[in-house]
Image 1 (tube, rainbow, N blue to C red):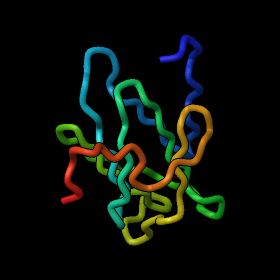
Image 2 (cartoon, rainbow, N blue to C red; image 1 turned 90 degrees about the vertical axis):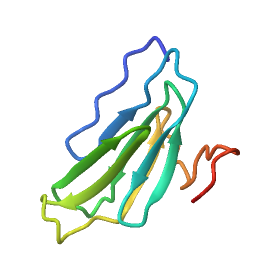
Image 3 (cartoon, helix red, strand yellow; image 1 turned 180 degrees about the horizontal axis):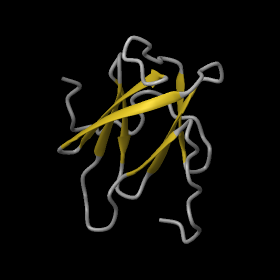
Length: 108
């Protein structure tokens, strides 16, 4: 990890950090409802940013072993699922779906 302190995510975005030192496996970030997948290596930081036209985005996160499942809702209303978002790394680079997919992992 970098020695500079990471910037905190605003209330309209969500920051995740993969557990770091001493871990050799990846963490899978699923973003629903389409199961878009991003793989975090130890020490990675990803920020999920809802689209510009989204008012009051709220995140629901379910953590299970080696996985985070994320839903983004407008105003916390489960009937208003947000599907327009961007995932960026700590440098502000937009990441494509499937980012860092491990070669030895089946997509199923």
